[in-house]
Image 1 (tube, helix red, strand yellow):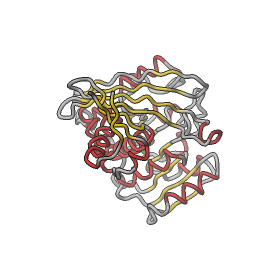
Image 2 (spheres, one colour):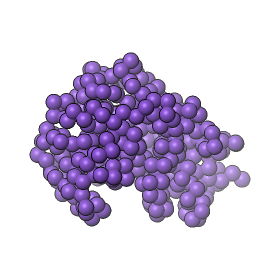
Image 3 (cartoon, helix red, strand yellow):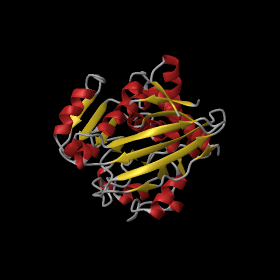
Length: 329
């Protein structure tokens, strides 16, 4: 009888997987994608409520990895404040590439959170100035926190973190969680978007993804040499931040352009195909050179290769540790 391993969020968290391990998997997945060894369709989705989505994210990674899976993930911006529920929820299914059978079904919330922070960190590793010392975080919820945990790994000279959130209460809870983890950092709470951007070497936006974005970050508030990373689609950075700098990079060229052509995102001045310098797979694989000077813009939608690589690590660790519940199929 065929069997699959069921892993809850508590099971996954209990495995003690580090940010460094997740980053290594994300980087390897990008490299293989850049080498043409990944099958990665653009993620289709449905949108049952305004500003909400439920996406299907399949992927096969070839080469020595040979792993395939699917994430079914929902993003509901009102969940935290109105319902006390996570913004993102979902399940990940890991398949056996030889037989097609399901090997595991696991919580996708931990995967989504950690691999998203890891992607920002790998982007910074290739695109940030080696001397970058000031990080600006706009949006201090789950993604703001995991992005700090990841950027500490990628920016060895990081000294100051500037903080801004539309809801001031988020600042206190952010500091209560993050200061004990990174006590050597200086934390500066800012009262405006302009203030948080001033003198920042890296600016990361982690705001809710909206169908009608506010785009609160102006190019005139940014340094000449700065890396801007959007974790929130086109919801925070003005279009000219993305188009008017040295380069624009996305996580996957095909997915970005497909989403632009088929949805409401990346309209009103956001980069078109000819304005894309590279996607991260091309950079990690060495097909395009990293750029670390001038204003660099990176937009990371989240791609399924990150999920497959992270789920693969989780599955191997869970089997080794005897964690999870084996269920018949």
